[in-house]
Structure formats: C-alpha cells, structure tokens
Image 1 (cartoon, rainbow over the protein chains, first blue to last red):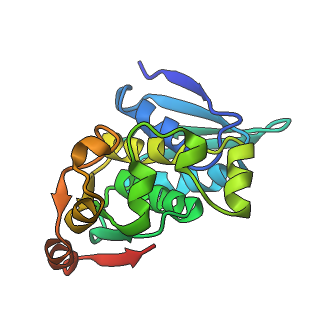
Image 2 (tube, rainbow over the protein chains, first blue to last red; image 1 turned 45 degrees about the vertical axis):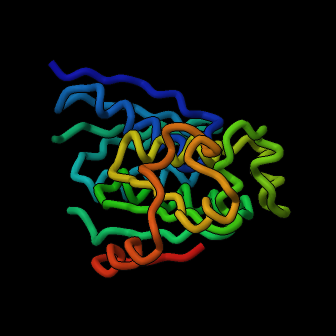
Length: 76
Length: 132
C-alpha cells in the first residue's frame, strides 16, 4: 500500500528543498508519495520542472500560511 | 531523458561564481545529466582543506546576503551532486604544481583526481562547456 512521507524543508533556499526531495525519493518505494513543505517560492516552481524532466508524477501543490506543500509520486 | 554532458570550467574564486557552479553542476547531475567540473586558478582556494567558511567564501554583495540568509553551503552542494547524481570533479594538475600542493591539501571526498586541461577539453567536445 502506497505511503506518504512529509519533508519539512521550510527555511531552506533553492535548491535545498529539491535536494531533500531527491534524497528521500531514493528511500521510498515506487508509488509512494512525498509531501515537501517549502517556504522557498522558487522551489515550488523548480520541483515540478525536475519531476517532469526525470519522469515522476506531480500531485497537488497547496499554498499555506508562509509555505507551500508540494506532493510528488515516485513513478520509477 | 538525459541531456548532453555538461562540462564546467571553474576558474573564479569569487563565492558567487563558485556557488553558481555548484548549483548548476548539482541540479544538472540530479536531472540525469552527466557533469564534469574542472577546478583551476583562484577557484582552487575555495577547496583548500581546513578553512573556515568565512575564509573559504570570499565574494561581494550577494555573497554577504547568502551568508546572512544561511543559503546552502557551496561545498556541501557539490557533495550532494556527487552523492545523488553523476558529477565528477577534477582538480587542475597545473594549479597543483604552481601551488606546490597535492590532493592532501584539498577537502576530502570532493575530487576524482587531478586532470590536465587537454584531457578535459577533449572530453568536453562531446557536450556543452560553461566557464565560470
């Protein structure tokens, strides 16, 4: 059964949130989801670009008070 | 889909340029693009073993902003690229000779060994070359 893991990367500047996402993707199974919390607006745009480039899947992006949550599904 | 290999010739020791090289190399490497970095000239000093961050990273206005805002450490970024992607780092053999250094003078686990410019440029013919 697919699981969702949260990564709290708030306070980290680009490419910190992306790097944390990539490191954690290596630790989860295909189908699992990672929810990245980022206060860096640039990373909210960078993460979907990277996901599209390497072939994973984007979930929802939600704006909260001072940060965003970005969900990525491991596809391979 | 991987892109053509990226080759970065890093000569400047200015913090902003070394950091931009680290960001470029690391993001490209984790995006399934092979990357090679050739470090020479003043950039070598940024990789000297045993330096405090304040001595290692010398720059201008943006460097001060990055330090104040605690942006990711430049050498740690290179390390992440090496750990998570296909990133190879070469130290210029000529620069080591000029300084009288060997690999023991450099931060550990950062380089794949000394290389000459001729070899680097020959390898770079198969990809894109960026100079910083």
